[in-house]
Length: 221
Image (cartoon, rainbow, N blue to C red; front, side, top):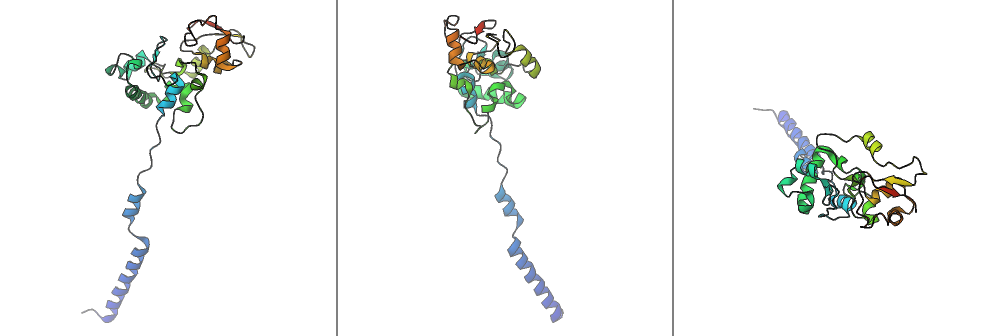
C-alpha cells in the first residue's frame, strides 16, 4: 500500500502537468490553423494580351503570330494548341491561356520578353503596346522554337538594327515580328508611335499594323 507521502508527490506532479498543458496547449491545432503558405500568383494573361495585341484575342495580321498572346504556329502545335484550333486566333481565350500555361511551365515568361514586366498579378506599370494603340504587338510573342532556348546576345545582334549607328540614326529596317510601338520604344523615336506612323504614312498606306520585314522606316519626319 503506497505511503501518504508518495500519494501526495504523484498528485503534485499531475497538478504541475495540467498547468503546463493549459499554458502551452496542444501543438496540433496551432499547426493546422497556420495552413499552407499561399501560392505565388501566376501570370496575368489579360496584361500580357494587352501588351501583345491590345487585348484582341482573335487577331491575325498575317505576320505569323496569332491571337491575344501572339503565339506562332510552330509553338501553338508544339504545346498542344492544335487540339483546339489550327491557329491561336481561331481558339477561344481560355484555350489560348491553356497553351500559354504550358509554355510558362516549360520555358517561363521568356516567350514574352518585352511584356514580362506586366505578366505577374499586381505588377506595376501599364503596357507600352496598349498605350500606343498600334494594334499588332507581335515582337514579343512566343517566338523561340520549343527545342531551343532564347539567346539574348543573338537577339540583340539581329533585332533593333538601325541604318546608322548611335543616337543619330534616322531610319530603321523592320525585323521579323516588329510592330510600330515596339520600334518606337526600342529606338526612342521622337514623338513615339504616333509620330513614327505620321513620318511613314506614305509607305504605310494600309495602316500602322501593316509593316513587313526588310521595310525601311524613317525615325524622324
